[in-house]
Image (cartoon, rainbow, N blue to C red):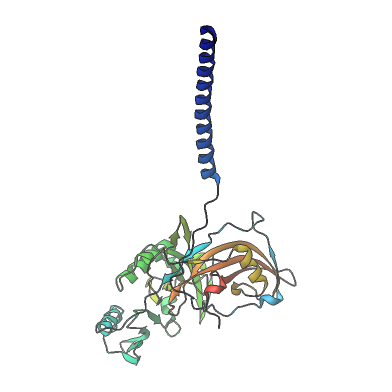
Length: 367
């Protein structure tokens, strides 16, 4: 091989070597870029539930106001599809109240803050009651172990607290002032937990006649204000979930205030069960499709309806929430909330709300 041929061969080898190196670099760039795009777009594997408590007790939902077996259900969400909901959610432990030597003293202090200085009638270890001759229209009851209590003023026996003269309409209590008054009233008597301090408060004008309470639209029609203290929402994985009660329109902490010059607190119901916040205690959740099928199989409970004589209904919204019972539970568990419109045989429209347990059935104790 001549010198010129050797030189040409070396030049070709160098040229192909450079091209090969460039090709390898480009291939590596393409591989890395493709891998990055794949990692970015591929679905993450669903998180695995931890199920630390094994099977959970069945949620004690209230009796259904309507037999869904007799109702023709249809799905009409805004998107026309089922919502995207998480495959798992936390289940929260509800600590069981424990008796201690300070229970009675603490109960007496709360009673004294309502004006009751006498000794209680002890019905049971969880039921202390007060009536005082100097407060003939007032009653107070407390569970000294949990601290939950009820106060009631007999406005039927003394209806003067509800009187609002037309001359004093400008001095009537407004909704915003009623919320402030009720919060101050409660915080002066009990140490409000954070989720009640940050509660969403519903305030409505109501008209009370005899023993009937009716919501009205304007203060001129009202003689009292009803307040509902809904606990602040629970947060998990960037989403918020409300805590709902057996009646979705009524909170477990609520108050009634008269609107007249006396602005008397007419009643207070305080039921609060604390929870242990631990987001690692997760359980699998039924998919919206599974929940819908269970609903069609009459497994839901109608907890709110304007007219129970509905024969058909459209589900317009599907969401998740947590069920807070008025009675003590071991766990705060998630539920599905279905809401929409129902129709009677004569085409009258009625809003409604349905609850359905959300944790998959294999992790619920079957009776």
